Length: 167
Image (cartoon, rainbow, N blue to C red; front, top):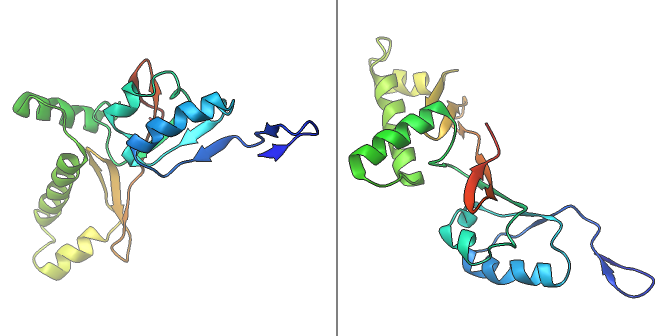
């Protein structure tokens, strides 16, 4: 933000990252609009993936970008299938913890069932291989150091719902 010759503040950036909770965002977004800073993209954290953001700041949440590890409404075919089966069984939508637990168990069981895996060391080695596991939380790869690599789901708000902006 910078001052113009007339002394008014002028926003000259395209996005603002606000790493805060939904309760605080519900206070901040209307203030940004009131101060005429509503035309910028607002980037949050996975904490923003909360129903209160859809309701409390309706009208002020049009240009938000929210990353998260799971989105039950994703168009990813594996995520869609997992969500459908979960909802049939439990009568509610799965959240991140259910999805990551499912993927973790699937990765472990699939890898352990490989004929080449016959010890802890070979299981560890197989997990660190070049395998990509397609799961409810997206494609997962473990590197040689054992670090997990998985893309985030990116979403925005459209028609009062969380809407995926990544395929």
